[in-house]
Amino acid sequence: MSKKPIIGITGAYVKHNDNMEGVYVHHDYHKCVASNGGIPIILPYINPEIALETLPLCDGIILSGGEDVDPKLFGQDPHLQLGPTTPERDLAEIALVKYALENNIPLFAICRGVQILNVALGGTLIQDIPSQVKEPIQHSQQIDRSQDTHWVTISRDSKLFEIVGSDRVRVNSLHHQAIDRVANDLRVVAQSSDGIVEAVEYIHPTTFTVGVQWHPESMASTNPTMNDMFKEFIKSSTNV
Image 1 (cartoon, rainbow, N blue to C red):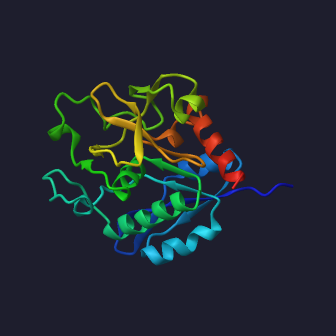
Image 2: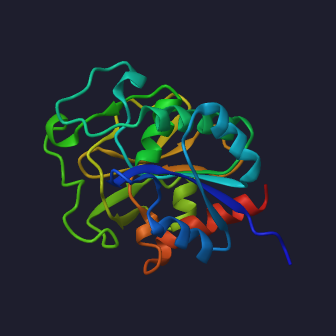
Image 3: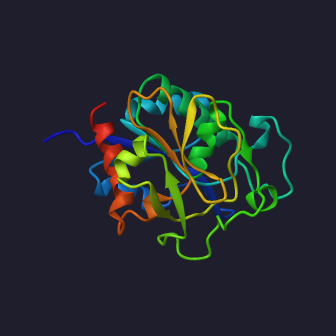
């Protein structure tokens, strides 16, 4: 029996009450990893040093969704609409990004994940789309997260196009922040009709390194196109 790849999924923060708080990952992530042949584990944020010590356990990394990114990391003051941030998580994930890229570990960055990927490589963020973008579409949908809500256009010369097989797909949308200035080592490979960056790829790829602004893990059980993204990611992780 061939070894299943271990996929580390970075954790967000949740507090139910004074006696219940800690690391959280939406179950769609680990269900999607498991259904495509991987073994999911949750990576808690503590500090960058311990974050790096978890990486020998992992054949691939998913940077998951969650809190806003602390704007001090890209040289800005907080916008009035900035949501909760977790600086410890930001620093741990930045360390994971840099190590993964330097050591050719497959990396799949989702929603907040694509934002921290951009910040880790020197880019900046739009802190609040509704107030900072002229005539934006709705990016924080009011329907179930498993449903699509808007179109994105994909570059034909991209890894993402190779995976999904189309230059236009429907996606869900659960964010109010987005990439602003793109890091030099990333290229934009998908956008929404209002110009928001919806996907990026690393310009020096030796393995799977893709970031998307939507949540394919929540569409994958009923949408083969979204599931193909995880299938390709798990395949890349199997070959590490």
